Length: 431
View 1 (cartoon, helix red, strand yellow):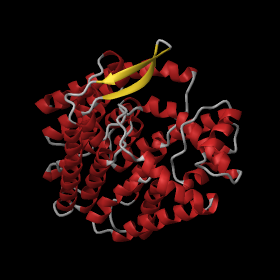
View 2 (cartoon, rainbow, N blue to C red):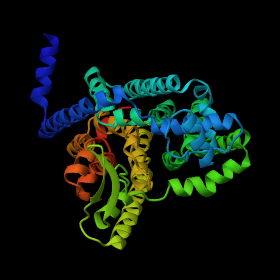
View 3 (cartoon, one colour):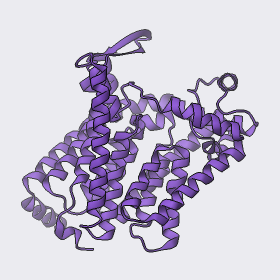
View 4 (cartoon, one colour):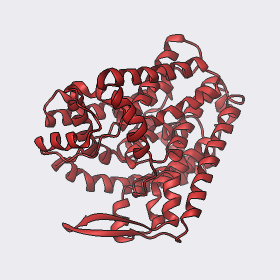
């Protein structure tokens, strides 16, 4: 009876923005559940683990003292295991972290890696729920977002490290939201330094620490990152490290117009440059042409770079201003959360399996504190767009228009826009 009265009170107090938010979330969850239900049986029958294959073979080659980036050796070793991985394009340090799992037989190692990813996702939800003081129903919404909104099944399917990185991001944010506490700041810096050593793009998460003048944490991030480079040299030799920085990273970081790439530059380029790709449909090879709005590649390039500059500029301004408007803890939480979608928008490659990182900004934007109407609606729109992006391959085969290949971009952009707003002033001053 008490719960019913409390629910009835909430309904009476709900504003128009609350009703719009609930309606959009219900539609988003319904669409995402359909995509999740469609992908799950295929994944359970035969997970592909393509990226995991690359990690596994590289770690085994490193253990043998062979080069990580010698494609001939990779293919020969993969053939022995009846695997077909993409080239290894990650830092040598990654193989040192992966070595204990690579010591296991491949199928067992794959399921151990998948279990580690699932555990990382659960820990991320638990840390966010505790740090943001979420109520039971908000924890339920966050759990649904974690399960449905990001490309969860796709990330498990390719065996990416996104869940582990997301846990590092969340832990770094919640362990030291204030500048006090040397050990906590060291832990936050170490987590982000390790994440940057695994994949370089997390280095952008140093921005909220710079805005807060927490330069000791920035130094720790840099020092730990340098330590990961030395660990890579020790594990794989200097040649592998040089190969990564001079060849593998530039090649992996080059702009790619493949539809799952939802970075600002890739989306703008696809809108103004025709793109053809090979695919398989009904077991037959086909060539699919993504239809652009116009064939003006220079315009797409200009708009892409303009979007990157605008996003970085607006993010930097809000980071600086918010530190001087809100209390220290709230300012840092909102700034850290804002930096995550900004990072995903400005890097040249923002694959759909990076979407688990959005768990953090969506939790802060939609579930922490009392949001203004616009951020509430943007939060729900972000979830809806992420749900629609789950069907990018359907659009690709049925309606291959470039503007239908950017729902992931809209989802990240809505999350970023929602976090440009500060919380209501009363709520912000309550801690």
